[in-house]
Length: 193
Image (cartoon, helix red, strand yellow):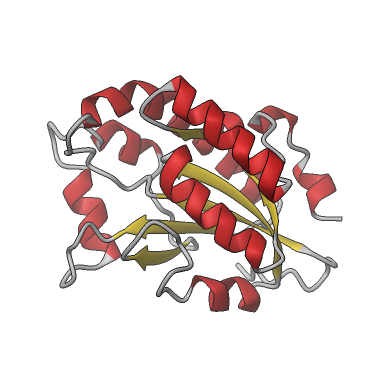
């Protein structure tokens, strides 16, 4: 599928940030309770995005695995018994999805994400994933600095607590002019105009 939005004045890209994640870290078990409903909401949004030709990009931490690749990361995170396995299975990448491995919090830092978005003619980003107050926030900041419109569906990202989640959403609304409505309130057809 050709995802270049040449028919639209501005293209939208859906970024799934750090959703391929085993959650095997301190307090990871706490994140699962927020991340599982988040994953289900992202899965619904991704289906809607794909029906409208919106490209889906997995922007994922490499977890310090410098000799690994994205397919290996997916396989490792779906293993039985892993905390994040259910979340990863809910959001398995498809053949026409894009992926970018990142070494730090922002999806833009030391990655080809900016070039990929430019190639896709993206002007608007829908950011989803983990965690609202860290990697989603840093990626949103960097996207905004690049002149991109930022949409962060409140039900499609999660943090280690409701307070941290809400504080980060508020900061993005105030400083990045981000739309943080719930995913069912986001009109994808309107965003493509």
